[in-house]
Amino acid sequence: MRAGAARGVAILGAILGWAALLLQFWLLLALTGAFGAALWRFLGYFTLIGNSFAAITLTLAALGRGSARRELAMVSAMILIGVTYSLLLRQLWAPQGWQKLADIALHDLLPLLAVLFWLLRPHRLLAWRDAGFALILPLGFVLYALLRGGWEGWYPYPFLDAAALGAGAVALNTLAMGAGFFLLALLLVRLDRKLP
Image 1 (cartoon, rainbow, N blue to C red):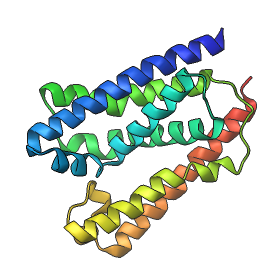
Image 2 (tube, rainbow, N blue to C red; image 1 turned 180 degrees about the horizontal axis):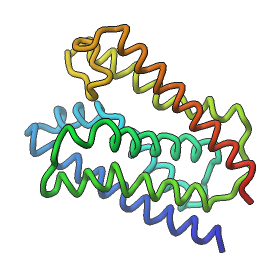
Image 3 (tube, helix red, strand yellow; image 1 turned 90 degrees about the vertical axis):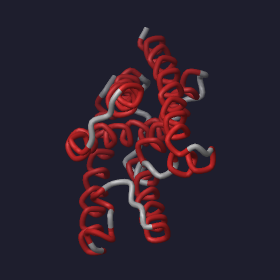
Image 4 (tube, one colour; image 1 turned 180 degrees about the vertical axis):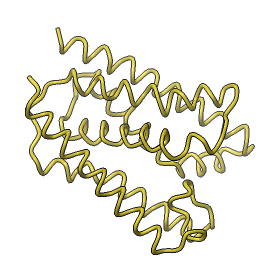
């Protein structure tokens, strides 16, 4: 019964994820007026990269091709997206219309569905070293965002803006977020080992 519920949530999450990502891309295309510019901006946000990873992971799970390690990385990233947006970014803008819908889907609904799916999926399949695997996506993004920001002068998030904050402050922000993310992944592995 739990396996069926997990598959149902995976299907719902995959549909919602792909729909929200397509909507967000369409909004960026309308804003920039060019496919290449919209794609370049789309690939600049961890929210969109993380949600793309979640949509892929949930699609594979719905097709019966789940992976405990990949699903840990997904749920860790989606918790990071939801929490970071709620605590640090939500008050920085007030989206309207279709953008508000995309915003809610990508920052609130899909993270909640990812957590629900992860709780329902089979457990006791993770090892402690899998927590390190979950760091690849967020730390890889930080490196990419800093290199890209240094090259084009645009940073997707204020806490990564090396031009405004300086390299030292961004390094501290990155270390703090990396440590928090690693602790989250370790807690999820611990929870995985306790769940039936």
